[in-house]
Image (cartoon, rainbow, N blue to C red; front, side):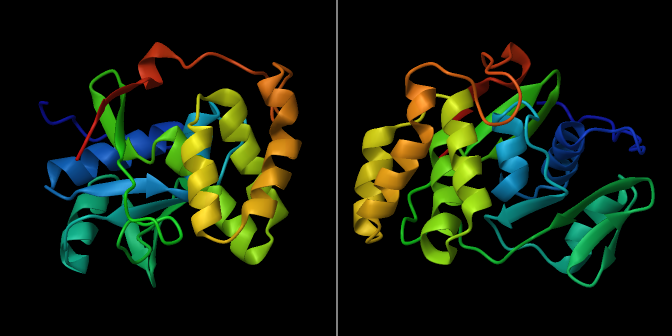
Length: 209
């Protein structure tokens, strides 16, 4: 893929567009990182839920200077452990790796594309599990609702989620997830906005090792 010219971020730039801009900037700098957390939910729910931070987990060692240079092309500046931008409320963080969901290190990122831009993200199933991990271990009920939102907007592998939940020791909490999400599997609407098909411009194109 040819390098994409850095875009100008403004107060009106959506989180989804910021995610793709950051994905392009990191790729241009040879930095491999995967979008996780709430921002990943934003992409998988077509912005029915909008986070304020973008958490990218690095999959190869990159120095702070490399990250500074890459994100600097978009106008981000490092403040402590966060990258802030004067013209957008969204900020970027790089939480410590490795890429894992609870005790599962088998997450396989997918690449989402929008025109010539691309960003690596957790798959819908892994994103659902990522939010369930916060619910299981910290009883964060917003994370439960976000897991439900992903399951209602995208096809997820319930067998894999069930097996992972048992391995995490949270089979009963998984049943609570199923109960909360039961309307989704009957075809009712999601907790955030309208239920919709995956837009072609955001459809996962290929899995990456």
